[in-house]
Length: 485
Image (cartoon, rainbow, N blue to C red; front, side, top):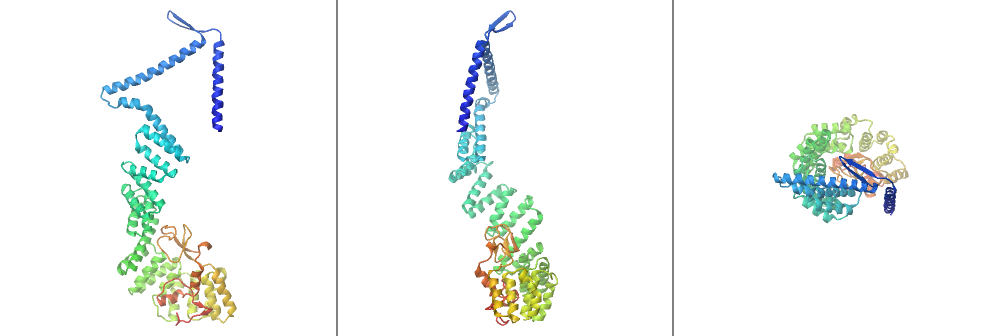
């Protein structure tokens, strides 16, 4: 509305100015005298102005005629497209103007206007390789997915736009959740342009989501070759892929493949806890206890973890308590001040029913870090030390509402996982699980917490053949005897 008013004011002002100028020229006395040779021409001011305009028009016509003459001469000399180019120059200029206007409209979010300008540009230019992408993106912006898909499919027919067409269809399939088709399209795009960084990321994500570890390794090598990934990050991801292969082979009963892949993963990433645990487990089953202990100790020194303690206990599942305590000193001495070491010492003391030692081991950990596990250990100590039932029950009640403690948490979406996996179950991100305390909203449900409170210690679980991360058995504030475990 305001713009229309501005235009009206402008045109009215222009008309008034022209009228005033014309009246001024008509009222001006005298004239203009032009002399050349023996000829002399006298013109009134208004006549001179018209003569000047006529001269400019004549000059412009001569320029156009000279251009046409040049085009005719080129045509005669054998340039068959000279005349076509001459007559189509203005049409081409209008077409490029429409293309530019369409791109501006697309950037401004005006999808309908962009589609109209793209259609105009296509009509004038007759060059679909320039206009199809604009038309497809404008159709997408306008919510017309079917029309956009039509343009993307047309782009597949031209070698210059085939990759862009595949990418456009791939984007639509991802939006629809059709990951199977999207994976095939990403592989096609990879064949067309192996070094395209964006497509490499998409292909790797889809392959890892589909558990295609072999394909993901090929894509990882391509990313490294294309310098789309730092070498250290690529090495870490290669280790995760080897671990994923090892997990598949282990579940399938292929002990040799599982051992080779797990050892390779552990060699590339010694601090990757799940790789160390699986490598040690396979070695223990083969009777190679010393190499298994070496792997677990190296991982524990980097990051103490309950799964490492569980695997270390499984090396000698039937050893006496004192022998076990002495053997576990190998882990304890590596990280004596770590909270996981304190909880490990507490569990060992509880297994021996040495409650004073267990109390000294846990120290103030239950107060500084009141988690389900630390509080459950504290409740076991209080019950074994003969404390009043109300004290034990109060600790257990607090444990029910306490934090679960450290878990495998996705660094991208914050989702907590009960077990480690190569990809996040919530957002499908690859190698994003970190051992840390999740946000309150991402904590495990109360049923899982209750299961932890009535579960077994990692050491006892290893003896029973159960390697899940659990805490001391406490049922109705009573510590279950070793025979029950």
